[in-house]
Length: 304
Image (cartoon, rainbow, N blue to C red; front, side, top):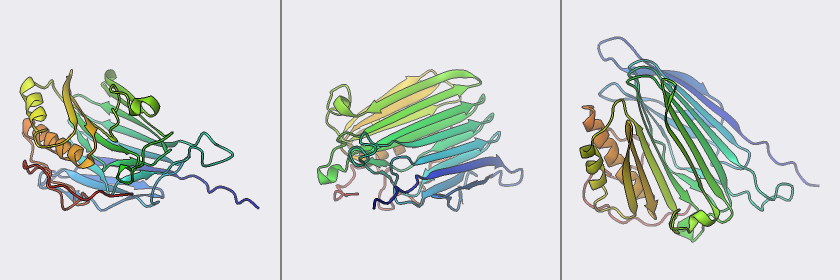
């Protein structure tokens, strides 16, 4: 007798951030989540920014799972949303007789920022196991003067064990609009021939992307400063300008190098805006010092 397949997860987190009038001018959050998503205790940074970690308690994602995260930021509010740990996506291609082509895992992100709001979306990395299928759609709606900084770091296959993505695929769609006008549509897909193509990953297992939708155009000095932060880090790193903001891409073997570079860019952007220097989230790997400009020490390979 064949047991029925377990039902996929349908999890949702809805968040709202508002600045509370008072002496500290701090941002507070309200909201809720359904299992396996869980909202952890928030941390109030010295500058009033609300730093909020999200936890996925299911131990990983399988085909058919769907996660939806919505965040609404009121005028002038400031928040940083991160994740407690790396997210794992298990393989499904060729694993089921009923669905031999595999089943996709979906994540949908919706961010709505009012005038002057500031959101930093900085989750920890995503690890797509061999034959895994993952698709993310991120939609960002910005009012005038709002700022959105988002990053994603993806490892395709557990390369520490010699594993590749195999027949798996990773897809990402990022759409950013400001007052109804398009600022960026960024559609990416990695899998098949693009994993080895020189115009794709070129045989490297790690891809990462950082996008800043800035309140105003950025100058060449900031771009040059962000490019200079590549010093001492392995991998291929490029940085270019948007009409208002910038895009940085990483291709290589090290999720640590991608994290370090993006953290330094994050600090540069904060300084450019005259904001307080970043306070690293408590849930990030405590042994890492990404803002240290010395080359990072090698760490033992991890297998997931």
